Amino acid sequence: MLGGRMSLEQLGGNKRFLEGLIRDRVVAQEAARLGLAASDAEVAEKIAAVTNSSAVVGNERYMESITARYGNIEKFEQSVRDSIAQRETQSLYNRQRESSDQKCRMTISARIQSST
Image (tube, rainbow, N blue to C red; front, top):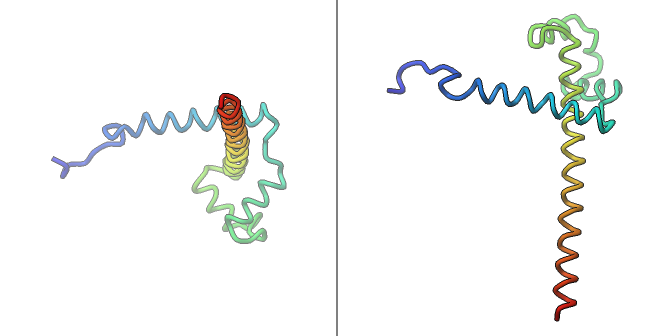
């Protein structure tokens, strides 16, 4: 039964892939709306961290590798920019949620104390 080849579609991969693309685009738009877009310096720093050296930017081997994976340097840099924006957006929402949770706990605690 499992010995045959299964396609990505049979495993639900097409749907997950599409949902991931949609999620990434929505998060990128929300980050832009909130002013959380990554700066050129942040992108360069992240690329340097990923490649373990800022000297590889502009290097022919680096450019060939990125082009083979992403199609071109601009697409790669945009994916890095989107990744940073996604991280910042998630961090912002997490902080807001924690703040809201904390306010709820304080309100409940105050109500409990006032009712005793």
